[in-house]
Every structure is written in structure tokens, then in C-alpha cells.
Image 1 (cartoon, rainbow, N blue to C red):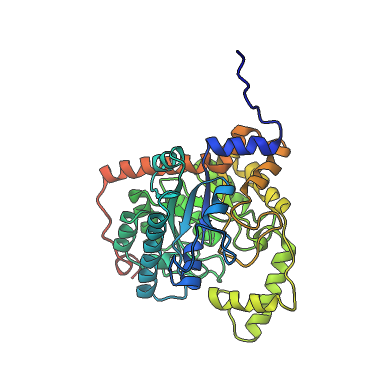
Image 2: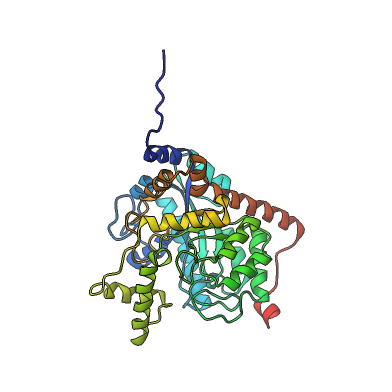
Length: 400
């Protein structure tokens, strides 16, 4: 008797099978902050088991999107003082733990590459964490160590504002990159197995971090500066360094970062906001301003094709092994047409398949590259923990 075996016949069929076999790992999702804003972290109020109209993320759409691993951003704004920022970061971590407990049939906490693989094999979505912004550690390596113990897998060195030891991309340069203490933060991240995330940081900070780190870095949600001239994007010389460092740039879907017309509209809105006393770097205030502005001045659209363009540029400059996806869902006000929520990753992968990407290439982009980076970071941490004790340096010790 002959057994019939279903062979994928279309790019969409290929992608569906691919995501059954390989976990798609997204680098950045801001649902925890949205849960704080919308529901004070109450999952009875924000029930994610059914479609949610006020977020880009819920369990049905994560399943529809083939998501196998999600880095939840345990984000707090850079406008908070150190003590408030550390406390709010811990609240975000607690929410992710509550989230995975509430929906344990679908989500499971993960810290390592093996954890992600095990979750995918069990049919659950690996829930990882990334702390977005150096304000989350309050200039304390002890705080960094505590976050690592709680399961935080990466540290974004800044958010929109400088921290005392690192320059952000969105303010005028102050240090020129990392301070001496900033380099110590990078080294301690390496020892802990916390990936260094260079999204949001200035080009000087990117280059200093790459010169300091012993482990691969990530950009959890950034796109290519050569394609869209936004200060949050990554210059080609830095993308090229990923070939040597081994890191990965996880291309984001934020319209301002992938389409110059949208960027120009937002820059104009920022100038008008400044005229009435609203700083574009004030995350909450500027988001509220944009929401009101769009009532009379609709924001232009980016498209899925814009994201494809950035993905292929990063692949060309950094190499296939150094590109991934970091949608930034629930972290901005609009998304490209065709990529409106977490259910839409297959549409992007299908578009790439139609452009000639092989299954192996799509698997690398979807999650294989970041899994390799995680494994390399874990191996570096194991070695460094044998070689040196935890750093006891302080900001005052190193930066005066």
C-alpha cells in the first residue's frame, strides 16, 4: 500500500510546515507595558485567551502567527528615576511570570536555547524576557545579577534617554559611547549570559559595546539605516561587524524605521509637539500626542514590502546568519499594512519565499540565528564564570 505524503505546493504551505518544525522567535514585544497601562496587570481584565481588540497580541493570534518563542520586553521608560525604574522592571518581570502561570497550557518560561526547543516540542510558546533600557538596573551590577536570576535574557543598554554610562541614539551625544562603567556592564552581561542588546543605543555605544563584548550581541528591534534614515536604525559598518561578532539584527516593523515618508511625518509631528511643550522622547506623552494628532492628520502607511526590503538589506550586509525578526508589537502606534499584529509573521515569510528564500534560509531568519546566538552566549557565560568572580565595581568607582 502506498502512503500519500502531503508535499507543500505553495510558498504559504511551505511556511506553514516550516513553522511546525522550527520555532519562530520574535525579539521584542511590549505586551507587559500595555497590560500595565490598560489593566494594571490584571489578566481578568485583559483576558488573552480570546481575541483582544486593544492589543496586537493574544493567544489565538500568537498561535495563528506560528510564534514559538517570544522575548517579552520588561520595559520601563527612561524618564523614571533609578529606584522607580528598578521597582517597575520587577513588576514587569512579575507580570510575565503571572502570564505564563495563567496560560500554562500555551506559554512556558524559558531562559536558554534548550528551553526554547523543549517548549516548541511540547507545543507551547517559549516566554523569554528582555529588559529594555539600562535604567532597569539603576546603575547597579547587583540589580543586573538579580534580573539575570529572575530569567531576564537580554539588557537593552539604553532606551530613548542616555543613562549615566551609555549614550542613546535619540539624544545628542554626551559620552560618545560607553563609559568605563558601561564597559563593565557589558562584561558582566557576558559573564551572566545576558545578551547585550544594542537597539536604542547610539552608533558610538554600538561600536564600544562590540569592541568590549566577548559574546554575540543582538539588536532586538532595529532596522537598516541605509534603507531608512532613522537614528534608531543600524549603520552598515555596524551590521558588517556582526559577521565577526556573531550577533544578529532582528528587523523591526515600526513604520518610522522602515519607511522614510512615515519617518518624515513623525519628525514633523515631533517639531509641532515640541512647540507645545511635549518632548518626543517622553514615551507616554508623545504617544498620547500622536494619537490625538492622527484624528486630523492621518499618519502615512508603511507596508510589508518595506520590511522585506530591510530584511534583505541586513542579509546582504551582515549575512544570512545575522538577521532575525523583532516586530515591536504593542510598542508603537501603527504597523505596516499586512503586518498589523502577531498573526502576520507567515505573511512576511511567505513574501520572502516568493522572492526565492529557501526553507533553510527562512528557518535561520525565523529563529535559527537567534538560537545560535543564545547558545554562544551561554557557552561564553560558562567559560567566564570559571575564569572570574562577579564584578563588584560601582559607577562611582569607575566613572568618578
